[in-house]
Image 1 (cartoon, rainbow, N blue to C red):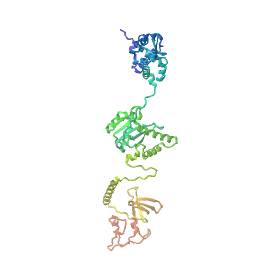
Image 2 (cartoon, helix red, strand yellow):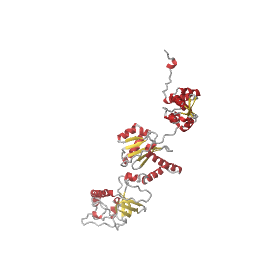
Image 3 (cartoon, rainbow, N blue to C red):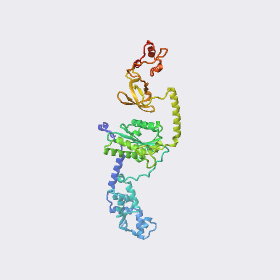
Image 4 (cartoon, helix red, strand yellow):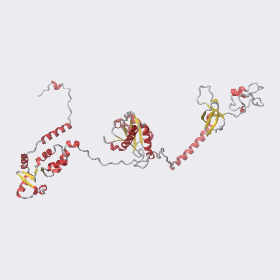
Length: 471
């Protein structure tokens, strides 16, 4: 019939949930307070009278017989004596069973360790298996458990080497760096090949985008090991792995040893970054140099360089190295020669290609690479001398400025060799049929309309070479 008053009904305070840790702490304090009461002599005497085992031992002492006594008491029977109704072992009190737990509480005040607590009890009391009871009591003490040293680590379980490169990989983030960047570190378990990507945005979407760039170079792995960071534990990343058939393996929370390969690489990278900062160098350049060295050097475990296990070849570095060609690629080289020759013959026939007759010392015109307008001719009017030639690679020198240019032979047109100067007014020969000999004019198409119209001149007039130059 207890009717709630207005304050209870109108209260906005939410009831606090039950806290297991607080309840356990309250019980611990209560137990400690109860056991803190000193043990009195009359309590020991009263408990000894009510302990059947102690009374039987006292009767055996009075009779001088050890028949039917427990083994623990028979072994020390000569040390036992009595003081009234209290049993003693030498100068130590034999604690009745119902008081043993209380004595353990009293001896554990101040939370001594097992060794100290044993020595403290052995000085004044005794009962069978007392040392075992002390060990169990200390191990079950909540306060001692909170501050005790951690358990020794579990025996190491070595991961078996995958069967091929890029089958199993591990990823992790290193950072943030002083400027806010993070490094996405990706390691191949087989070859130990490293990929390090600098990222400013480490969201799940950005992480997936960067991983797709890496996968486009090396392929999709079968498994990916990562920690429990928000980028790797999100539903979006889990769906990404399911879409591409990647088995996602998360390491145990706060146990980085489970992802030890990438963690070891993180420590090595961080060491180089610290060196770069202390020496005032560009950490990005130093990181690239470290990756080059790491990929080219033999790994201490595999005995092979990461690049050799990843790509089947050793990387060229600044050190002088003899890089031998592999005989297994001879067939590839032979096929390449055959296919290239077939393609060359077909293309040359289709394009009606012919070898250029330009030689060193020739005078040429160069093709206009850029035209200012539609009226510009394909070739400029400037003349050049050929100074060097190697295949289709030709170096020409301007007659006006002396500058040298590098051009393809296809972009050059050879000028005709003639004894006629620009100011000469010598005439060209005319055919008997009073028509112009088209083949004698190099560089002017024979079917040109202007050339045909020019042939309609007064055939009695001489034809000057400079007229055609103007044309």
